[in-house]
Image 1 (cartoon, rainbow, N blue to C red):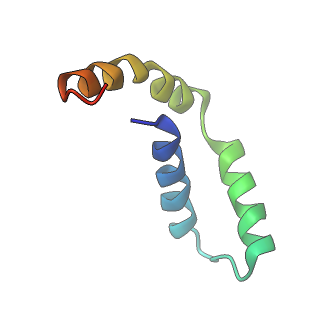
Image 2 (cartoon, rainbow, N blue to C red):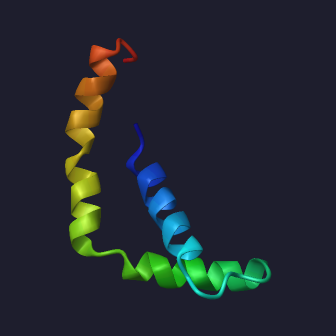
Length: 64
């Protein structure tokens, strides 16, 4: 339901596709910040625009 979960999955995918993986928490944080900054506005808009569809799907599943 929550679009931020999709964003986290995208960040995870991007990190795993990097040549160098993080070696410690500080490095992971830096890499996450870089990838977050690289998420396109179009991607964010698509996540935002998906919210009404997600609500309807939740209602249809009688989860709301």
